[in-house]
Figure 1 (cartoon, rainbow over the protein chains, first blue to last red):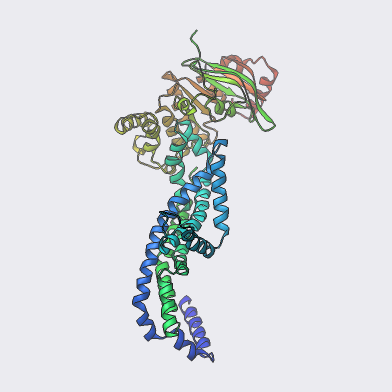
Figure 2 (figure 1 turned 135 degrees about the horizontal axis):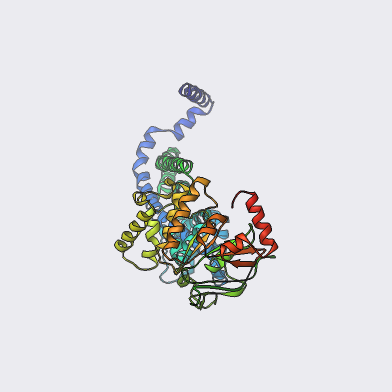
Length: 257
Length: 249
């Protein structure tokens, strides 16, 4: 039944689109097999750049996000300045559109002409993405840390563990388990946002497609690049689903406290 | 008379406008078992949390082996390792096995070798009849079993004093006995214990001293037969009458 209704829907959609008056033109400019096939090698080469940004950036986001989250959960007046810095950072970079951060970091930092600061668009683009995503991920981590019941910390401290030990051995492992599905979801979002570094002129998949479109006046390379990003995202999305379902099952099988 | 292991002197503690402890004195000598009784909100748990430095006192002092541990210059982490605390809700670490729960503090805090800590943990778990559960995770255990593990976890650090905060209150009635049996055994080995409890029958059997808290004041304390049998204070009598009505004595 599900299969039947799906097929029926797909057939209807196909008929509607292909019977549209502009369809022959759209098919020629967006879905040209010939152009698409020829555009594949340069776009794949560009996608390799995106993958590098994804892996390096993703790792840095985890580290920076965790540091910011821990900073925001520090108690006591002595840590107030650190807490304020972390809070301002999160507010700033969660609120600012990624593309603006990319422009500011990608064009602003090299303009400063500081010695020793990299000017490569690849590095600066990755840095901009890390800045924005770390702010999001920090909030995910913080929610996880605060979801661990205070009694767990009390038990840890009563055993003589220091604040740092309680965090590392008792709180963070439980927090990480809680936030893994949310983190994977952010990772899927990051996978497509790495394509935005093209605005700095990095020859990634999007930029490669743009160049090809400029040469041929055919938009098929965009479709190819888009589909490749989708292919990249599908495994992560399924993994996120799987992990979320497993976490739900675990929660139902036995509550922790 | 030896000097007390734990000496609470005029402790005052408020949460906002709510004054929970209004100057409590309580001295606990070595090998003594003190039962704190009183209605809910009387300050039993707060007193234990102040004594174990999980809360800071607003006024007064707590002395452990003669050292003022409420002095802000004292390293609280250093003090906490000399005490064992067991909580109402067990508070085992759900992501660690039973064995790792027990060996965590001995290895991470007291610097003992993993092998030595494991050996002792196995011996302790065998004493409470849970040797075969060592590799299990806490959510596989019943409430009574979890609480017994929590007691063993507190004992594994060789505490000077064991603080038990209503450790049977969250348990199904048929599981209370197995936990109290462990406490009884630990007490018979000479452990110094302060326990907040609603189990009057158990307090009568195991405690040397029963202390009645009411509205943040320690109204009277003495041998169980006196405080529970022939209390001086009218408030104590009222409290006990309610407890008897509820069938708990």
